[in-house]
Image (cartoon, rainbow, N blue to C red):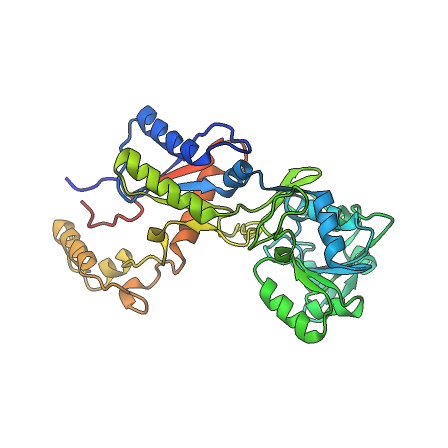
Length: 395
């Protein structure tokens, strides 16, 4: 009898992880305990996903707003222009708090009608009705309030992010503007902190060519420890999020070490060759709020070598409706399996792969893991995925 179930994803409960805990053993033990408790078998090429926050917590990779303030004082003089942060109490507000405590003059530029990941500052239809041109128009905070009102709330969170960011000012040291041209900041200051995530390299290059003086990104802050702080040599403050009102958790370091070591020890304990990845935000878009979930600099900061690349799959619906259209039942099933067994190593550009998802395997798996584990109180920071590399021909 052939395989009756394809891909499955299980959220795996784990102990509460604290700084200094042996995360590698915790992950392995949690998966093995789940398999024993729920009576399922482990197989080669199973995938273990671990949320990035679990790794960072075990590392103690935290920084306080005082550390952020000190880093800003090290990098900037009397003023700083900040361009295109995302709208988030969890992601950016605490960072801005640390910047504001430096006492420097801050010129904060927000993208509109929404930030980089789809959080809206205004109703796009109203923006069009008013006649605002987002490609050219620059709005002051006063303009924004006059046009859109005093309480412009995010549809999901109910938060007025312009007000939230303004309230973080120290002695009224934050001025807020809305613009989609990063060069606008240079009319106010030549010292700039690039705060967007996915377009940060392009933004830096534009500002550098336009004459910026001191130019840094969030990924350039806390690349090394300040006093006793955490740090991330590659991403800095990118991927950080709120731990407490005065502390952020940074994106984890040395992710490759963790995934390779878990893979190695799992093989020693079980004889199974599993793949392992650390995942952050999934890369998917909400159809109602239009929010693109990915606020981390990457979906997966570390994964084992077997997860490299993109899927190489045939579109079964296309095959069944075209060249196999005249076949039914067992005859059709046999023909499909033969097509899968004989498919090319690289199907890019082939008609039979048309409509398959052209994304990295780690991005697809990261979204699956993120949706499975959730971001609330499920208590399943580890995800076990089975059957992902199976197909219709797998017995």
